[in-house]
Amino acid sequence: MNYDKIIIASVGRAGSTMLFKEIRDAYVRSLKLPIPKLMLPIFGRFVCRLETKSFLPKIIKTHDLNCEICGTWLYIFVHTDMLTSAISVYHRTQTDGIKWFEKHQRNLKGHGEFDDLFVKDVLNYRQQFKFWNDSSKIHQNVLSISLKDLPSKVGELSEYLGFDFYIPELDHNRIEKKFDDKIKLKFDPAVFND
Figure 1 (cartoon, rainbow, N blue to C red):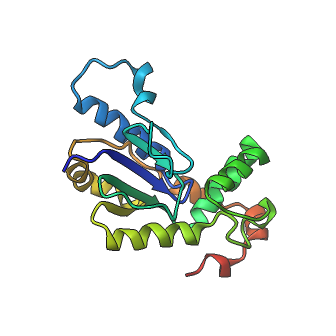
Figure 2: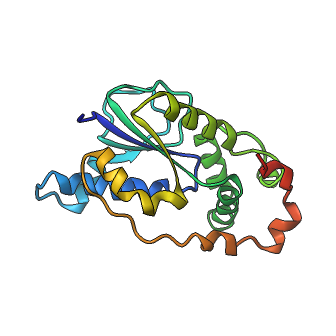
């Protein structure tokens, strides 16, 4: 089936930007047209909420949840474990500031303070995971995949998408190496056990 839209959803800081760019670029290559890189954003971009269905590009990255699952759209939900996502958010906030965190949290429909990142689910991770994982069990056009499984599923994903694509080699230890003493002091293991 040729889908109207391809949606890359995620819990945030789970590889969705990388996956989105690779799928968008592969889709453009599959058209076999001389499209300059400058034109790539026409084919895909981040959309905060999916309720606006008009004027959307072919490939969409989002952190939306509890949205209507459209039968003519293809969805890929990519996720990591909650702790890995939180560590990545922590370090990105150290680099880009609290305003970045607040915007990211709004995109995820999360609530709470940055200081509670390791003691509460301030990023709405559980609801994100539940909505998309449950949807993947009900709808054939929703696929839930772990970032760690992504490299071994490229062939399956290419078949699912209807065109070939490639992903760069992933360094899964990069985030785990960043689990430093500052984080350990704030970390509540009970929050991250399910």
